[in-house]
Length: 86
Image 1 (spheres, rainbow, N blue to C red):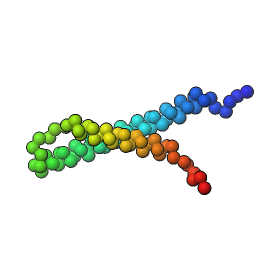
Image 2: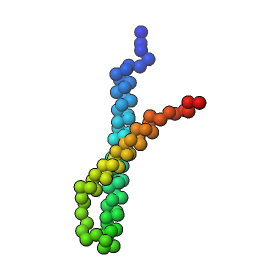
Image 3: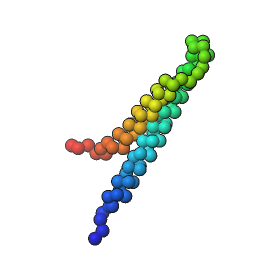
Image 4: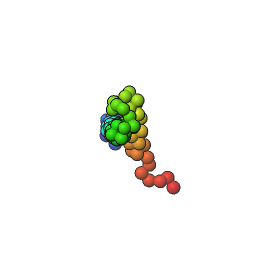
């Protein structure tokens, strides 16, 4: 008798799709936050509000927040219900 779906392959396919989507969204979020930080620092340097243009460790930490936020958004978008319960 044939099973409707194999548990191992089904779970592996679902987790692979969710993880790749979350990973790509997270990378996009990281680069988006990092780009915004770099644009703001560049404009600040041109205006003279900062003396040196340098990338600091805090800039990378803020960009990691973007990675986490975008990954969570992608995961929640895929897990939400397609039809309302009522």
